[in-house]
Length: 79
Image 1 (cartoon, helix red, strand yellow):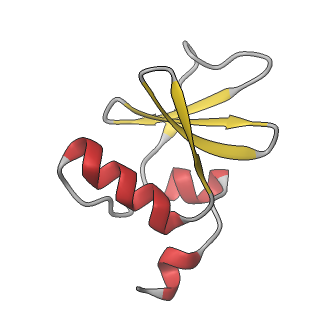
Image 2: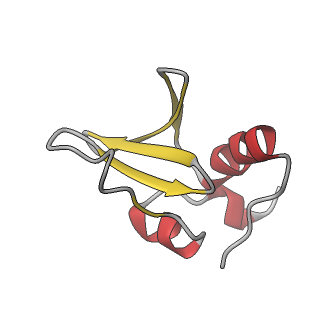
Image 3: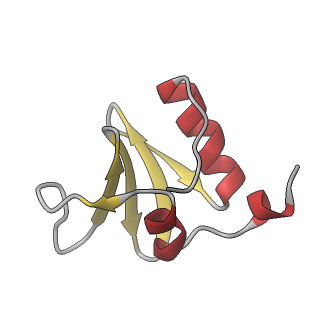
């Protein structure tokens, strides 16, 4: 595993990987970042992959890349 994958998630990393704020889904309590209809929810400083009403916690870039590959059938790269 690459040391890059061990980076803790941050909004800056999401932006680097092509995610943008989804203003339609963002509310006072949560912020939603989206890329290719793949949503990352940020609430209380924690990151989650949200699918079918279930929030899966994400801690690092490796977890994000894993969920993205499973959901989109392609690797996640910086843009």
